[in-house]
Length: 368
Ligand code: ATP
Image (cartoon, rainbow, N blue to C red):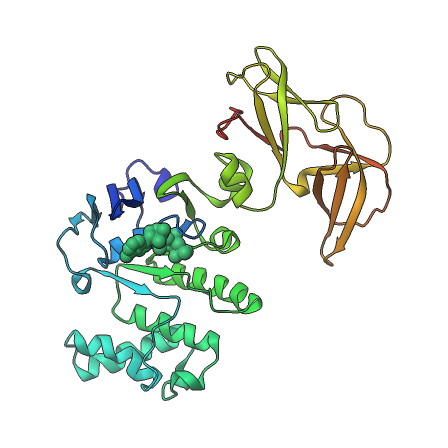
């Protein structure tokens, strides 16, 4: 059992009906969420969705307007930030520029009143953890971006918090370093057995690092699931579109029976959705297919779920090729494949069940 699926496990962190208003603007809206011990948890959403505000309330930098936050059985309401067993690593790292790496790490420990000997041990321990032992005497400006990020990480781990909060931890790094650091962070979290909560707007970052992801929109959670669940079964059109790339086909419901809903396909033809969900004839619905689930054929394909088009653009990425296919109605469809066929015109279809469909309110139409 994963902790979140184990009925005997107690949640470690609980947000209970938490709301945060700034004036008459609601940044976090009556949000309830449980996070488990040792989870690598990601809060994912577009800029302004309220994810940082949620993290800052857990850290104690913001006070909820309503609701409460419980950590390891303890209600945090009224506990000032420095007394909470959490630590935050900021995107900007907030390192002291005039202090050495060692002193940057020592600063918070000194403030806690930790003695010199213990402090030295703790600094050595975290420097080893982030593989920065040879850099203890350097100043931040004598380090690379990746090394500065590690100092910030070491500093936030030095107090041995119960929970580490990471606000856009990789935002300042270039692509290659970001990818390496993602793996290092997951290894580190596993090794330490600590609970990590990361805030990010980068879906790839959330997908690669997290055990579970909460996707936020307008101060609320719109889906809470593991990365494969989010990708394979997005809970709404918004999530399907936000996580990974997706082709969205829009069409009216033309027929339905007890187990199927038939939509008009772009450029004629029909899309058949296995669904017992209520749908009205004439209502608009959407159908979402990931680029790698589409299949291209030079030969005509019989039956429903077939779209006709021509190759519009081809982008070669080495490990795969991305095709832009222009359908007869002008819509551009993305298809990714390992090989590089160049035939055109062509027909498109998809593996059975390799899709999700949504109703007019952009909620889920399928109940598979
Ligand atoms: P980003 O990735 O851009 O930081 P976010 O999802 O983390 O976005 P928050 O920082 O949580 O978003 O902000 C949510 C909303 O609340 C935003 O619209 C923001 O302008 C607003 N907000 C945040 N802090 C304050 C504040 N102190 N006063 C007024 N409004 C605020």
